[in-house]
Image (cartoon, rainbow, N blue to C red; front, side, top):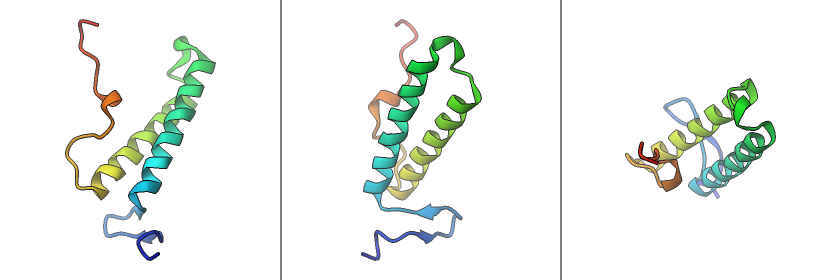
Length: 84
């Protein structure tokens, strides 16, 4: 129960259980994909899409810090090869 409780860590961000972080990342990804489909590819630089993608990036970084990871567990976030 204590591990699931939110607490302020030394780095200054709110520490969360890894499962909670994964759910938030998945939810944010779905929200961002929905926005991108609705807005179309010509307006992907709108403020709302940019803000949501920044929030997603910060959640992924927080997840990596919590797990002391140097690589991502999200293979679809690896950049595509230039030849594609």
